[in-house]
Figure 1 (cartoon, helix red, strand yellow):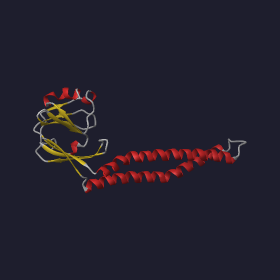
Figure 2 (cartoon, rainbow, N blue to C red):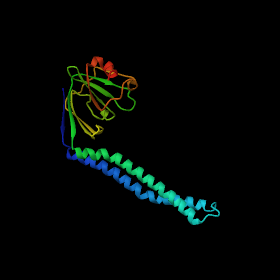
Figure 3 (cartoon, rainbow, N blue to C red):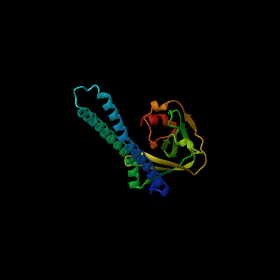
Figure 4 (cartoon, rainbow, N blue to C red):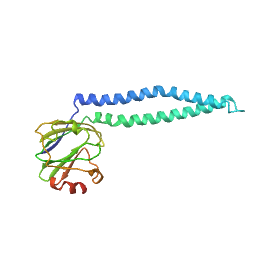
Length: 213
């Protein structure tokens, strides 16, 4: 069984996204409050250090030169930090505007476990229908007790490009023992997977299905 659906953000999910935006904004503001003094201090040190060597030059020229350099560095850092802030908060704000959570209700009687994907956690292939498999996994999966399971619900918060910003697994059934385990560094052989992905085929043919993706 595989039944995708959508719903609005829960109040707790909205608060979590807003909190992440706030943390990033606060860190940015704190850095930008300190940065002018750091730039001024470095400029002053360079100015004092080079004044004795600038014989024949007016001190005002030397000071003006280093002041221009300092302002240029500060301007570049400000631009880069603002770009970094937009890159970090943009997807979160977009998810808040979209106000949509994708819910995947999954039921399965058989699965295969895939190990060896370095530090990205275990992955599972669930049989969710006649000739239909659901691949899912990631570093968060070991945190859920009684997983894999015969029935569970996955709630995904994503941005407009499909990037996963939040995921929660709700266990609804009984623990499910994998029929087999595929070991080894298979990530080098197969293309990287999304957090959740549907494949057509059977568990018996999983390796060949992954190669043909």
